[in-house]
Image (cartoon, rainbow over all chains, first blue to last red; front, side, top):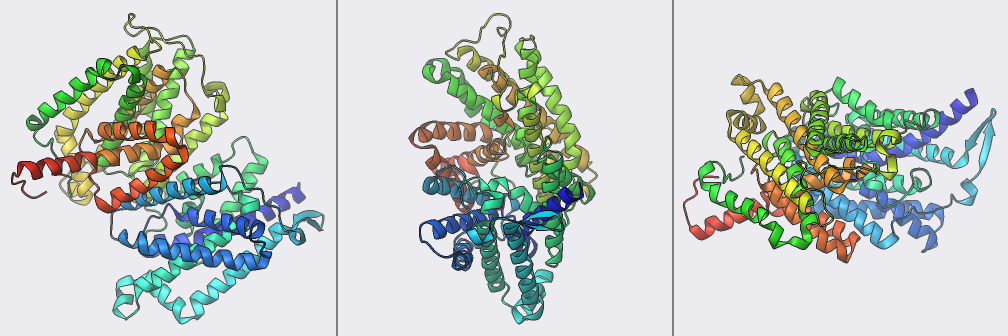
Length: 287
Length: 327
């Protein structure tokens, strides 16, 4: 009983770490620009497919693939920001929803066209597969790897945000964009870079998550609720909020599916509604 | 900002409206081979009208409107599967069930701002979709609800394989509900909704019960959506879980946007454009269809948000060169 609980906890944390990586960029988009970006999952999907291509067609080694995925997803994010998103910052929420749903549809169709509608079968690399037994609990090595990567990236992100000059301008832009602008911080540029990094991280999360979340063309729609939920629960003032929210969500979802499979995804949706009813103005409101 | 509103004075639009309904009625002779498709268009148009009340008039951005469509469809489906095949009582039951669901959920929806509303409505839609999947005893689960037996409409018109009865039945129901909605949106109630959409704070200051109005509008929209769902169930004699799917919620939004929001007929026009495009384009390739749909959505947002109706209105104004005042 206890061992199965620890196993579920471990899997849930790894799952939550993936959610965090994918959603952290969204928390900036929603928090800094008050921009509803329903297409965020598309960058995660892009990362997943680049990962599959890199490993299977280009034959890149695993640890070369990961930075490559990050760079490609970030570039894609930058292009989308320049071409589409920046025209939408001052538009109504409905316009933002429409355009990003449109982008999501296009990404789904494009993924179906190039890769087919089925789940991508991707083996965990050999040196990361298998189980280790720790104190009688069977732990999946790959999930441990996910946790380690997540923790490492969180530390890097936290340091970058809190110790560097660029991080300071990001925080300033999040807290008071107008004052930041007045102090000579180029909020637009800060946002562009942050957006690209967020997309890169989403891509990285998608790539790492192929074996855990699955990868098929409807990925952006399937997980959008989770990403929005992480941001809504976690808020945007620091990295800690989304991190805790993502971990909590991951554990609850995995536990729910393990212990009460008959109600499945029910728990997450019900939790979301209850939460938003308790905090009707959303935990992200920054006005 | 209020969209250019051709039906502000009901008199001016009357001719166009009458022509529209006459053309639809002439559909029996104009497109006899496509009656099944056109009854789907009418149903989608009715559903989009219901969504127009939520989005176009009350200004609530919802991505879960299929919830009420699905509740209505299942209500009508389950009723007829249990041996009560009379169509109008099916519609009534569907309207009632969807209305109750809409009323209960409206309290969750009308609180909060756009993002919260968006997430809550999405959540409600997904929740009901999951529910339908988990209750195969009632809904048939993934296989869908089969074995619906419909009695003839009014005891006379049997549902035939050419879809003649389905078309006439859908047309009649849609027409009556459009008339009612037309009356409603021109009433003080409808005007107050538009006021709330444009400036809720000011309407509150003017003494309007903003929350109650929104709840009433949302509930009524749910009733309309439920009737649309029931029509689909009765005319196709099948209900699948896709009636509750996220795609259906997104599609109704697209239809309404394509046609134009807050203009009463936007939903119907949008549904016709959308379904006909879908019919012809997805014959070519289903994947291309979704791609172009997405591209089209982005184009609409970038180049003009008032839809087909708004664009044709601007065109007609340009041709008639009448001073239009500020819009």
